[in-house]
Each structure stands twice: as C-alpha cells, then as structure tokens.
Length: 356
Ligand SMILES: Cc1cc2nc3c(=O)[nH]c(=O)nc-3n(C[C@H](O)[C@H](O)[C@H](O)COP(=O)(O)O)c2cc1C
Ligand SMILES: CCCCCCC(=O)C(=O)O
Figure 1 (tube, rainbow, N blue to C red):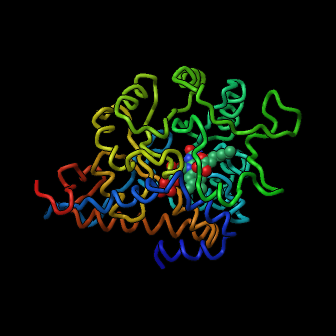
Figure 2: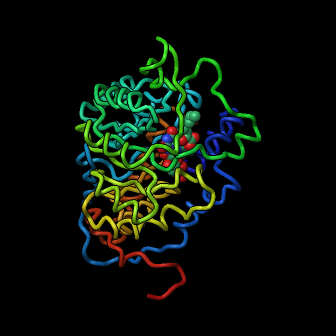
Figure 3: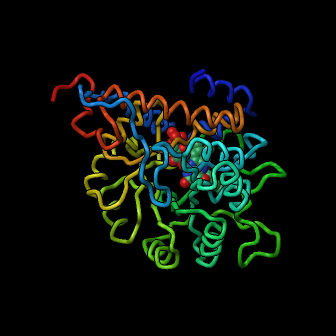
C-alpha cells in the first residue's frame, strides 16, 4: 500500500466536509497543486562509486539532534479526523524518530501530546507551533505551557496575518468545530473566564517586535514558519531565529505565492548556513526529500500525508507514512551514491529536460 492508497482510504473514511478541510486550500488551489508539481520539475543527478553499505540519514535539528529528516508539520484538529487524535500522531512520530510539530490548534492539550510521544520514546522531540496572539500575555501563557510540557523548540507561524480563504470550507459552510471538539491549548488563557476558550486570532499586528519578545523570554530555540522571501530569511536570523521553515502553509493562505520548493534555494543562500533551513509543502515521496535536501533543506515536513495516515489507520497509519518516506529516501540516497544527507548537493539537482 503506498501513500496514494492511504489517501484514498482516508477520503473514504472521513466526513466529506472534514476531508475538504484537509485537502483544500486557498482560492483556486493553484498553490496546493504547484507545491507537488514543483518536485516533478526536478531530477536527481547521481554520483557513482562513492556510497556505503549503510547510510546515516539522521538530521541535526534544533532541540532534536539525530532526528529523521522527515518531520510532521503542524496540522490542526486531529481528533476531528480520528478518535486517537494528536496522541496517536505523537506516538507514531516518536516511534519513527520523527519530530512532531504539535500546534496551537491541537484538540489535545500540549502536555498530553508530549506525554504520548514520550510514552514511545523517552527522548522524543515535540516542537510547539505557535500562532502568536496580539495580546502578548496570551502568547506568553501558551509558550509557558509548551515549555512546561517539555517541548524542545517553538515554531512560530508567520505567514498568517489573516486567515486564508479556504474555498471548499466556504462552500461547505465549515466555520466551526463540531460540539465536543476544541482547540484545547486555548482554554484558560489569561484574560478569559475559567474554563473558557480564547479564539485563535490571526493578526496583522503581530510583528518582528513579537519575535524579539519571544526570543528574549524563552530558552527554547525559536524557528519561523512561513518564510518565502530571502530578505525575511536574513531578518529571521538577525532577530535570533534558530531556524527558518520555508512554507506557504500547504497553499492554504495565499493562492498567489510560488511553490515552497521554488523559494528554497534563495532562502538557503540568504541564510548561508547560519541556522538550519527546513521546508514543507508538497513532499510526497522519498525522492522529494532528497531534492529538497540537495537544494538546501536540513529536513522536510509533511502535513497532509500524515493526516491521511491518521484518518485512515490512526497511529499505525502515521507510522506507515513516515516509515515509507524514510525508507524511500534512504533508497534514493543510496542510488545517488550518498552516505549521509550532506552528500546531496545542489549540483545533483537538475531541471528536467534542461541542460547544465
Ligand atoms: C488540515 C491542515 C491544518 C493545518 N493547520 C496548521 C496550523 O494550525 N498551523 C500551521 O502553522 N500550519 C498549519 N497547516 C500547514 C502545515 O503545517 C504545512 O505547512 C502544510 O500542510 C505543508 O504542506 P503539505 O500538506 O503539502 O505537506 C495545516 C495544514 C493542513 C493541511
Ligand atoms: C481559527 C483556527 C485556525 C487554526 C489554524 C488552522 C490552519 O492553519 C489551517 O491551515 O487550517
């Protein structure tokens, strides 16, 4: 069974409105499609006679030394998609040695997500995706929860000054979670009555000053998610980010941006090795992982593929997705004559049909 089969199984098992929430994107979903197509425009140019019997595919990531080069990107509302919810995803990621980026919009409190991961592997690394609140005391409370839970890095989403217009959700009238589901990290934040939920606001007022405040106040590495412009990548480093995540939010924010992969080389050049560069968006095969690593990523995230695994088969499904990508990537690395991730270099990626 390959990832496409798991996707199909998830489609059959999900409420069509929830399926659309995951599969869909902004506008005409051009960017959703382009993220995947971008990988098809490249081919790998292998080196020969330089491999080894065994390969070391571990990636050195902030707060996660020796992790899989494939991590689970933050996706909202897992309990809506499978009763096992975020704890199932967390156990699967931990079992596969992959970082899970759990999120502000988790339907399970962050402490329970980390505990689930650690029940599989005491050293499991869970990062916390933060949607910064324009009220800084709310943001600080979220950060404290992530720290207390044992998260090893913060991933601040910076591509969402406003919520993207998801065409399918608008058409389906999907605006609220059904009763019994909530973004549990937003419960009991300062300024709200006991037990009440605070909305997750996306605010254009969030700025570099908020990044400075975060970096000053937390000992955790702070990565910025949603960087596409090389100038912002440089600013991220100047403002103390411990990593940048090249991402267009899986095509769910603007429908007029480039494919994430197409932004990667310029961002990697701008960062110039000062901090790790990560990428998500459109990664569906082990060879996609190899292309992204060769173009400058230290690791890549998967959003929808992990959700399809969860919806189709719970914890076991997420494991299958992560294991398949890792095994395919290892095989691709061997075919490229590589022994470790850093053996994949930019000269080994060519435009299909082109000359160089
Ligand atoms: C259903 C769904 C929910 C998402 N929720 C969040 C979120 O809460 N915060 C965030 O920063 N990104 C969110 N994302 C974006 C992912 O983190 C990631 O950038 C994207 O899914 C990568 O593209 P891919 O799905 O092609 O792998 C979400 C994506 C999906 C599909
Ligand atoms: C109003 C809650 C929004 C949660 C964020 C979900 C998200 O980022 C997505 O792409 O969907």
